[in-house]
Image (cartoon, rainbow, N blue to C red; front, side, top):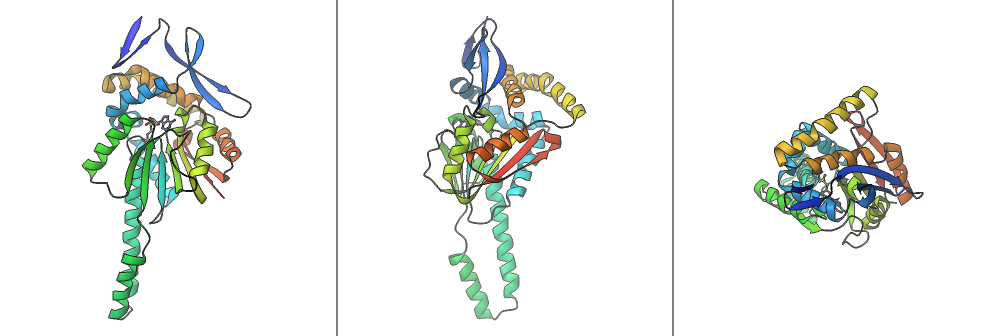
Length: 307
Ligand SMILES: C[S@@+](CC[C@H](N)C(=O)[O-])C[C@H]1O[C@@H](n2cnc3c(N)ncnc32)[C@H](O)[C@@H]1O
């Protein structure tokens, strides 16, 4: 049987996205697919096609699949990050830019709050002091915050750029094609590295973690939002039923693409548990590694620091 997935065609009678996780001794998790029983790497070229196919419908599918809850998880990431004006963010596997948009909005409101506070403080000062404090805010205030959205997939970035323009978010934002395993940035550049719903797609997770460590400044923070292991058995059963029976159907109905969404569901199940992933982050050289479960572990936020 030959079946076509928009512009990509897969030839195989028993082509199926049956993933298997191989966990080598150095904790390097890989997710592979099988074709006629032989494992082949799904990541790389084929995965590129998955995201190329879903790019145009990615945002609408995110809302449909998560019933809008992905917005709350992303807001919670920003709340935990609490970035200050002047911070530099690298958002890897940034896709259509959701994390970077939230980051820039958050630092903008922080800056406004700080300026209002400075003005309130100025009410007890003389006119000359007030004038000085305004010029201090403008000239000596924190430098502009920047966010770099880095993704391996040009199509996802293109959709993100269009979204940014329609939302009027352009200042401090840049878009870079790049692989999480080999980032096109110098060492010690960023205050915060985020990767949201992206790391499970990376072939060599340990290599991506090394790259995160390299590009962060000393004191910089790594933050990863990813689907994880549901801790409550009842919720786990409901979640499994929903994921395997509803999500591929939504993928077919909304995006005309059953297989890509079946892949997404399978890849979630193969990702290491919260504790396993925490150990991998520590092994990469991060300190103070912690995680927080959201929605009973459907999603976990891992955080660590470069010292
Ligand atoms: C599920 S989307 C997440 C997008 C975005 N972070 C969000 O939260 O909406 C996963 C993204 O990972 C990207 N990706 C997959 N492998 C990658 C790699 N090795 N390096 C960089 N990006 C990658 C895909 O192109 C895709 O845009």
